[in-house]
Image (cartoon, rainbow, N blue to C red; front, side, top):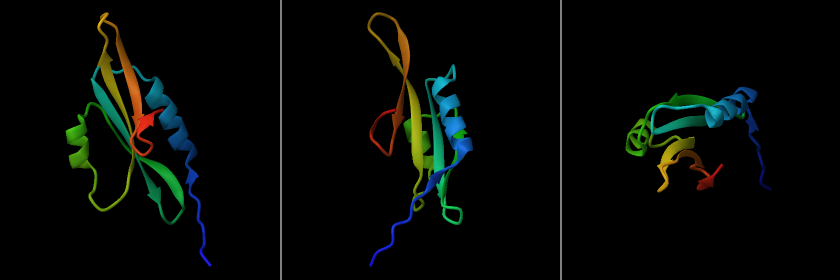
Length: 95
């Protein structure tokens, strides 16, 4: 018989995610990295990188320890508008 274990979200992580999504940035991209604390079974914020490119972020992440990444990046539209999209790497879509 298999056992299923769930992980809770740290309330501080939820606050950090909300702030990350709504923050005004001068950089073109930023990332919030979270990890699972195995002892507490809690998903917690590990670090925020601002500014950082996707290649730089890949070098910062450990190779053999899973992380959850939320990345914000700048998009320049044809009409001159600038918007910032938020991408959740685990889901592979926009948040």
